[in-house]
Image 1 (cartoon, rainbow over the protein chains, first blue to last red):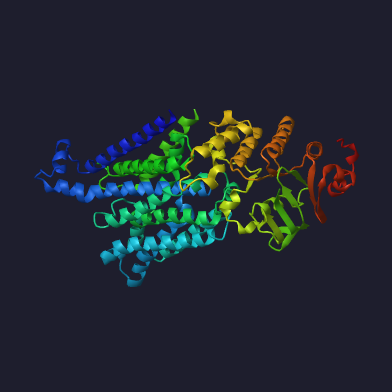
Image 2 (image 1 turned 60 degrees about the vertical axis):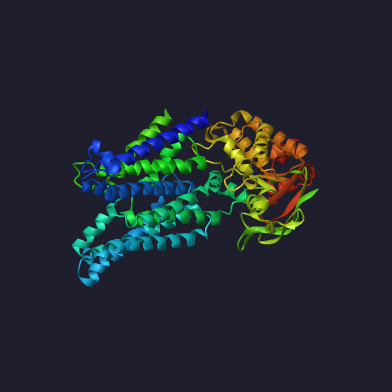
Length: 340
Length: 247
């Protein structure tokens, strides 16, 4: 009986996700008329612009949103269980700040050194930014791994992560202080987050990288479940605490680094989605929570992407403006409902 | 049968030795209470036995082999612990807490087979909490939580169970109930049980064997009646009114 409730819940989230995905393809500043949807899909339409919009622009954007949502949400779940802290999320490791610093260095220093804005450098402005974000994130990730392999205490690890985040943040601010106005603008835009940066050209690399990370999380479910008892019990049950936290931080950090590199630092998804999964299924079993959190994360980012692109918003509203605006009331309502 | 044996064991953190020259054995069916004033090193001894910290000196042997030479997984099948620390998760079910005891025995995804399910069921029944299996752990009373954690240790199926202050937070009847449960485990399951406690009066009444530690005093072990008679308990706890204790 209980299993059927879980099945219905998961199916519901999947169906909702499919609907959102389809809406993502056809709703936007250029609406695709309903009767043209099938024509476009079957490629019998004479109007080529519609199929270009859908296949070259909206499809990769929807796929990016879906993958990023799953990755960030599950990365948050791993952090919350590892640190046994409901407010933990991937940003706690300082990874987003590391990525920001990397991007800051590329955008702001290019301008300072050459005297011209980075946007005037063509290919460098797009590939350079992703690469810089990834390198910045990975550097911080390795610093955190070095600390976590030495330490058993999770609270001190959180503090170190936050300190590194602040440190990276302040260096970024110093860079900003010495930068061109135009560059600062480019940096701020990157910081708002967007799912349109991946596009068709980089989709394969992005998708494969994310899917590898997502698959890896499933192999962590047993150890995550045992961590719920507390570290001392987990250790007595044969879990190698340090090795385990290194692996969890590595997987969570890897997913966050890739998403941040391609989409910018997207807040809130990692923090909030695990809570929705827990309260919806009233479970703490990670064999259920991992897939459930991924699916809910997908729905959430698809929904946010849809809102950000609604007609009337003239192009793209920044994703970070939408995630918390839509997400916070959802989390509150889910928690209130289950408390009744 | 001798299970655990220490020889000239020193315990502590890094360079700071808290207690030294500990020579004790733990055998099948033993039920031993570890007592001593706060700060004497009881928790440190537990942490050393559970390999959370390394011994400062000396040796600990488990079934004649150095404790540290076992892999964590092997050790998990030999020594189970019950702590004062409690799992604190909003949705964690009692069944899953006890099932965690099967962690050293299950495969990569932690899937329980028939044997595991049976062990869990037996453990829940043995401590009398099978009716709580579907409850959320956090909603239980202190006494019920204690029993569930003991059921976890039983499901872990180890020859030794160590309990850190299992009587703390319990009301009087629950304390008595706990002692009889521990006795049952030692007698029927042939487990070696070591537990620390501050309930001196109850211990003298319900347990035969004591290990006693105090700052700057040698580690002592023996029958509780002897330790009481020769004044060791009085001396170690710096008690003045021990004559009022009736046993």
